[in-house]
Image 1 (cartoon, rainbow, N blue to C red):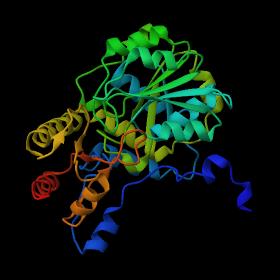
Image 2: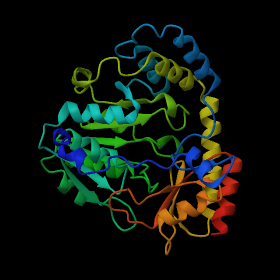
Image 3: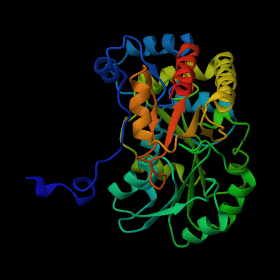
Image 4: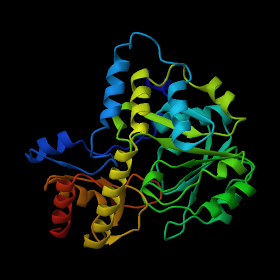
Length: 352
């Protein structure tokens, strides 16, 4: 019966996950593993988020609000008067945008190396994926990117970029938007850790979607809450294409609570920026400037997979970047964790 499986799934391994902390602990006999592989927030969710989720859980026998209206209202209080849509993580938003605008066989452009799910999701919907390599320093060449977008319905650009950590200036994004005929999905999963604001571009361009997530600075990775700023024309079609009742009422309620706790957001951002700079200053390998809650490190002449294993033996779980398209096997990505996790990583890195 395997012949029934589509070729795009039978011939590839799909999304590549980091090894779990439980596996590392069991394999190396370590009680406490520093979890620095998945760009998670090391702090638990805001008490306001936990309380709101607990209240919502008592009504979990009912379907959630079809448009997550309380969450949309909270997003407008937090960001201003924009149009928003939601999804099960930003992955769910990505899939729904693709489903809304891309016909099978049409081109989807992806700036690489980057988060592999853009290409995986596009291919799963029958699109033809065009990967556009970044420059040697991982910056985007706008002319090359714009040329690749000729005739494409949709393009993906991540800023700050995963896993390289660098950002694209808003002026360059605007240059791309002015030349594109299709829709640009600008993934801003890590924007809360950067000193850049792309939101004003939404007022001037009808071909821009800004993807966001509650998994990072808001510490709700386990509840899978994604959302996006969208142009007015796209909103009704997005809802037609979306999976019914996709975002749970518990997740949406937690997100509302998290958005209200601005002090916790500021504290988390300060923690990340402090340790991010220490990583850049103290890691004894080449590091790349980052606007995100992680740092990419060149570990040559070792390979990323080799260093991941050696650090795991010391109780530190980081991510090899080998699975990122177009990046090669000499890089690792290290998230900012709790203080003790970061100290353990720096000590282990210095002993490599």
